[in-house]
Structure formats: structure tokens, C-alpha cells
Image 1 (cartoon, helix red, strand yellow):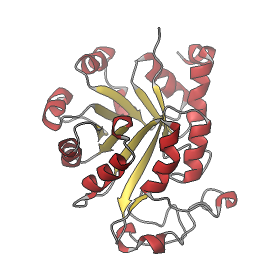
Image 2 (cartoon, rainbow, N blue to C red; image 1 turned 90 degrees about the horizontal axis):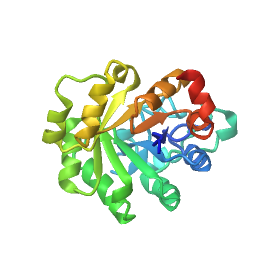
Image 3 (cartoon, rainbow, N blue to C red; image 1 turned 120 degrees about the horizontal axis):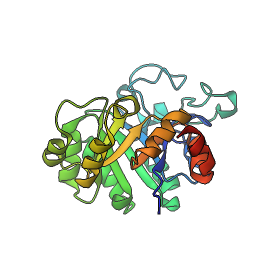
Length: 251
């Protein structure tokens, strides 16, 4: 039986609703995605919020660093109008609010830790443990030490290292960092042979790829049997999942 890669909605269904908002997560759940990827920062008063950028300017009507504002100040911002006026009442959610929505759906949660702030790993894991969601969660980061720290705090949580390219043997990284996933840039993974990918998987290192929005790239990742595809367009990936003819056209 053919195993289809996990369809993981990048910042939610972010081509259909503002990224990293409850609205985008609801869309992903409605699309029956296998998982949702989201990004976490801490506020000035050490509250965990869901936002990609260090600064507020791109996705809200605010300015400046997330770390310089309290949760109460951030909750006053409009996090949707940049996408569409229809979403002008969207707010930056807390991680707790995101979990309240996502946990009942029982889908995979991919939490990317963006800041390199002391204590953020422990705070994120404690929040996830409050929901008994450790075994449905992957914590990822570009920071190797952050990933290692997460595994040391909680062995039940899966971890993944995000990479745009590889400078060292990934199997050595797996051993040193105790990672379960290698999360690779869509353009870099296309430089690897099928044998490379198979070797990693045989050594229990699962492969996720980001950010895959083109049909030809989706078809490539399906053909090369990656474990999961992180995409802004989960509705497009569903076309391959539920209608194999679409895959054949791009194979």
C-alpha cells in the first residue's frame, strides 16, 4: 500500500487565511490536513504567542519587536488586514489558544521555535504537556542547541532540525542532537538522490520538506517518498492525495 506524505499546513492554510491565526488553523482542519505547522515567540511578559517574524510590521498594524511588547499590547493589533479586509478582526493567538483549537482535532502539531531566548523550550514543552499532546507534537528549530534541549527536557516529544543545506552528515547530526526529523528546504532536497533519502529513512531519520507550493515540486516529493510536505497550499496537495491522476500528470 502506498503511503502518501503527511500534508502539513505551513502557518495553517496560509494561502486561504492570514498566516499563524486561528482562522488559518481552522481552514487547515477543515481541509483535513495531517498536521499544522506554527511559529512561536515570547512577549515581554514571557507569554507564548504564535507569529513567524521577530518584528510585528509585516503581518500586523503594529511595529517593532515582539519581545518589546506585552501580550495585552499585542492582542490589540490587527493581524488579518494585511491578507484581506475580511480578516481585519484577526488577532495574534497565544500558543494556548492554538492548542485549544488544534488538540481536539488530534492532528500533528509542528511547533517551530523562532527565538533563541532562555527558557522558551521549557515553556513550550510545559504548555504542550498541559494538553498531554507530547506524542502528537514535533518541535523544530534552525538552532541545533534548541532542538537538543527540547529532547533533553522531554524524551517523548519528537524533534526536527530545519536546514537550508547540509554541512555535516545528517546521521551524525541525528546521533548528536537526538533528532527524529530532518526538515529540508524544497530546493536543497532536490539535490539529493533517492538513495540518499532512503538511507536517511532506513536509519530512522524522517524527512520533512518546506515550503512546497508548486505542483511539480509536490509531485517530486511524493515520488521520492518524503515523510511530510509542509505547504502554504494544503488544498493543492489534497488534489494529489484524493485524485491520483493529478500526480500522474506531473510525475
